[in-house]
Image (tube, rainbow over all chains, first blue to last red; front, side):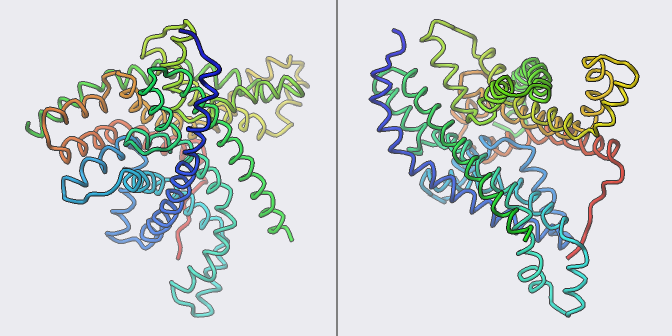
Length: 219
Length: 219
């Protein structure tokens, strides 16, 4: 039983059909991770007991594998009576996992803003919330655009983990075909090529956006 | 099952986790050095080919690659053990990332380093091995620590290709003992106990290598 090229071609439409689910999971997880990561970083900067707790949580997340988090949420939430769909649990898991990394991205993005900006805000007697919203956040966005884009690609490459929770994204669909036909090689090859193509395309797009932003910064 | 039994059960998988990490490094380190240096030295078509190989390993989703090598290679007549496949895929993926650190480290060195070597009459390979590489490796050591942690965490995936690592053991225990909260918390903690000391060692190393780099506080 060798590699059947014709069979591989017939699996392409089914697997490509799941591209929407893959991209939706990528975008929502990146959004969730950004919101959570920024919140974590703000709490961490606030210091005190909450700051320390978040500092530990970020270190904890960064020292544990995403697969363990997905299993944890998938099996532990129903134990407490919280029943969510596999897709929701998957997005929650990826958001939580990548928030630990994005908190570090936001930290670096804020640290790179000259200290005088904060001092100027204080001189204008802006409160902490207004300083963050009107002075720090807009400048930070330009600093974090590039690493955020890289993490968007990372999250895309992490979405096949969701197949383990039976989310019908591209790898999940490939496994559906495999279990129906008992042929693993062809659908997995197609899924592999599609993921690679998608990752390279997204990385290229991110680089283009990055260059545009750098051009804006130079003006 | 008591908490202690769950812990001991999961820790039985630590051996496989360590084994995959160690064999993974056997693939990762030479790959990172050879391809990182090759990308630094070559130009034109050769550089394009070297970059293509690196990009393949960096841009593919690890889960998909793991399944691909596990299910597709046997169809093509190459049957490798689950351990070999895991070490190969996880190692070369980590090596792909590390190769970029090697390349960037070499590129960031001032040209004067090479010129000084040439003035001393050293050959190009001697300059690379005796002057450039040692400096680049020292500067890049924090990145390597991060790559190592990523590798350890990625070993959780080998449970999907039947290796009895910590994640596999956790799933096994979950089948006989319905206490997901205790089991999956213990799994997360087990990874934390392994990875966090490596992260701390990395931070210590970073401070040693680059002492003036402090954290700025504010807002």
